[in-house]
Image (tube, rainbow over all chains, first blue to last red; front, top):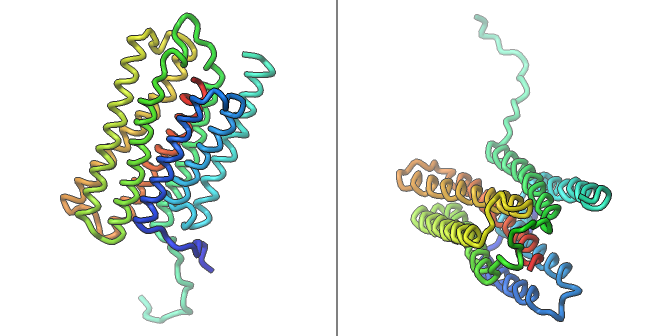
Length: 99
Length: 199
């Protein structure tokens, strides 16, 4: 059984569309950063938008959605390990020690 | 020496070299996530320790950095189009997109050099404060990654000009592409965490 995804591979038209979406998200991010009314939700909003761009580039441009599952596993290992490891560091130095 | 043929030995299993190379590249990128994770964490710890120097709100020019970010995002588009051309064995088109990607990378680097120069003129050198050190370290090392990527792109394009890319050239372009897209997604995180969330 093949490890690869059965999803249809993107075409140049799909790539241009993804680029358009990335441009639109970047524009929204800049607007969000400057709108005072959104001050209370600016951080989660920007992080969500950034995560969306991250997923689009990794999934479509890097073909993570369409390639062998093992590649996804290797990359996700880093993605899961990094927040855990550095979350612990931030908690230790930023909150517990206060430096 | 005997000509006698014994029982057939089980066929040796050779892993697909393309899969081995891609696995190695993804493992490398996974380790790079940890590398940049450590730099971003250091920045988050020291971002408010600006000492006597200027802080993010005094320095950052978001419209300018947004244009730089856009340039780098578009370089990912040209990179994926180069890979697509390589898969179709269209060498001419592939070289055009590779060189376009390198050019966009150079524009991004020029923007970074301009930005750093402006910051130094405004009083933010690498030793000014913990914020300055962690900022220059993070964004500077990302810039070094972009510069390495530009060299890889130019080397791949010129190898293709010289006919030195083998028939499986699509794999070489894919390796460079994976690295380039990774550099792009790191910038996506840096742009949000370092720039947008600090103004």
